[in-house]
Amino acid sequence: NAGVTQTPKFRILKIGQSMTLQCTQDMNHNYMYWYRQDPGMGLKLIYYSVGAGITDKGEVPNGYNVSRSTTEDFPLRLELAAPSQTSVYFCASSYSEGEQFFGPGTRLTVL
Amino acid sequence: AQSVSQHNHHVILSEAASLELGCNYSYGGTVNLFWYVQYPGQHLQLLLKYFSGDPLVKGIKGFEAEFIKSKFSFNLRKPSVQWSDTAEYFCAVNDGELVFGTGTRLLVSP
Image (tube, each protein chain N blue to C red):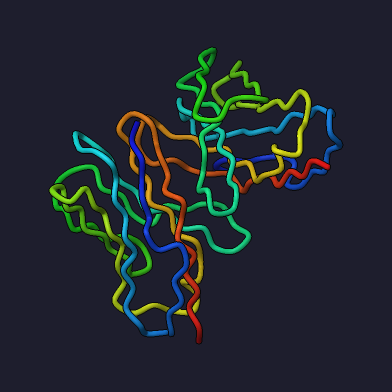
């Protein structure tokens, strides 16, 4: 199993540009999550999904959108990138509300 | 909503020293508790978890944690750290939503 994979690993955006961060898991997990990690702030939940077709906002959803058309994929969309969205983004998945498995992360810089 | 406090933001130890990292959460009820580790440049990996049963939990790489319900605590311990334990450690609590602490950066000097 590849586990949780994320692409790209690094990206630099200009203010106002849009992009999609991809996340795929091959463990048949129902739950998937997007977090952002900022220095000294821990991980903050952006959006999560408990199954295909179902998404919910986390703690910091503003400026982001998600979709969950399949069990495997959970892309995160930034429509109008802002410097405040410079961060490291982690996708995770879990079978239920137990242990979460994390992807390698995407380091995003918005200039 | 639940909150998680990790009181030590930075810890510096010499190899073979003992480690204890504090973790407190804000309120009780049924919770699942986790410690994750993030080695430099890598993603988060699970060190250990507590769901129920014996409050002393043993994880990978010689780490253990003790759940003390009356203190809302889940402190991480290791009797003798190694240079390879240099990493950032996150405590997390799940009572329906997984909430992370702000992390503790551990530097182990050879």
